[in-house]
Length: 236
View (cartoon, rainbow, N blue to C red):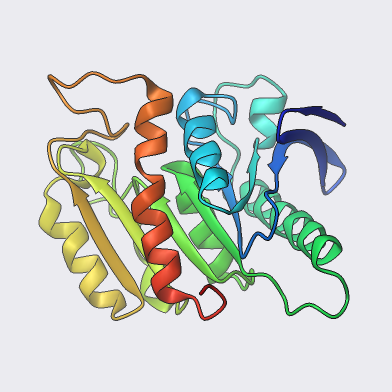
């Protein structure tokens, strides 16, 4: 275990396979947000670190974690059973750290699950299978493969009852036509909210307004904080 600034690199056991994670905890954190990466980049990507560091500055404990395939330097993402097991292990780790920080007399700290694309979809599948979290935050939900709206990956979403925030770029090829994701959110009901980012793609980049990936990730922290605050009874 190593520490750099406010961040500590830790190892989490996923059914006998160790994976790397980065944990950060400010004083008096009212919630923890666990964040998993997308299919094409690991937890070290500047988008990921930019987002979690911005959430830390807003008063959240954060845990960003690698899936086993990234640890093994494999190209293709893990199958859902492995990815879901990773999510369960990460949430258990985060809950344990929150309990240690709060003490036995403290009320349980909310643990939120968030993910970029693949990471968020796997989080939702874990919750659909019973993983306990306070809510879900999707940083670009991959509703379908680009150009294949007939292959929607939404069958499990309406059964989830915890609060869900969908942050989505209007130009994201994984969610075009936009009306398809709007309809999914309507079918889920009051638990779900969608916020469209105008002119943004799947990486939340906006054509003609180039920014570093860390800055792009950080820019999503404010709407996430607002949503969590609006859905939480533990924050003042």
